[in-house]
Structures are given as C-alpha cells and as structure tokens.
Length: 156
Image 1: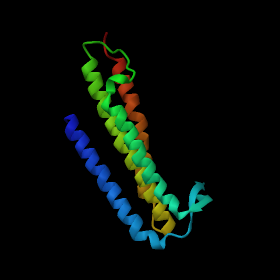
Image 2 (image 1 turned 135 degrees about the vertical axis):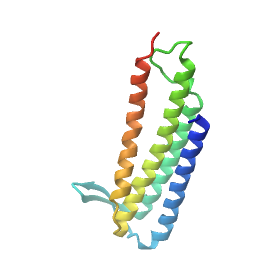
Image 3 (image 1 turned 30 degrees about the vertical axis):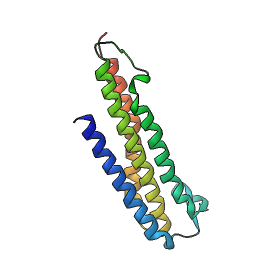
C-alpha cells in the first residue's frame, strides 16, 4: 500500500473514532456523575476524579498525535541499524510508515481508553473499547521492534 493511501486511511479512521467519541461524550454528559472512577485495582475503583477529566485524554491524544507527526516529517533524523546508501530510502520509507502507524494507533488507543472510561462512568459495558485500546497500544510497541529486527537483517 502506498504511503499516502496508508496515511489517509489511518487519518480517516482516527478522525471518525474521535468524532464518534466526542458525540458520545456530549450525548452522555448529563448521565456522567460528578465524580468518576479514574483508576482501578483488580477491577475495583480506587481513585476518583471530576467528570471533566474525560476531556484530558482526547486532548492529550491530539497533542501526542501532533508530536509524533513531527517525527514522521523527518524520518532521516531518526537512528537506524545497518543504514547504507543502498538501503537508506527503503529504511526511511518503512520507518515513516511505522511512525504513521504508531501516531494513529496510539491516538485511537487514547480515545478508546477514554471511551471505556466514559462507558464505565454511565454504567455501559466498557470491555470492548478497553480491549481494543490495549491491543492497539501493544501494536505501538511491537511495530518498532519488528522494524528493528527487519533492519538488523539487512546486509552492509
């Protein structure tokens, strides 16, 4: 898949999920109690905060999305394994794709984690958004490891 199409598809998915979450946030806002559970130990809430905390994760997600976007613009500034003149373009291209993937999956993960918190706060099952969020966050760690393994197999 070409980089531009890959990025466009991920951005559309990210914006769609953010739009859906913002809609749900405003739609359910009146049902959210003034104090919500913000931390859990063994599925039991053990820390509470104001309901306005539900705005922090989307804002933080957008901020991180823009920060990672700065790295995506200049993949040549990152560190590489076995970088040579012969393979630098493919390494830059693959790294850019991985950074785009991390940028969007981490953003979606933040939004879905917040969606799970919102759902839990109003008594709706929150397990699916939470499981998807954790899975996407794990992919954000696995993707660069895969890239490092791939780069380490390149010949000088």
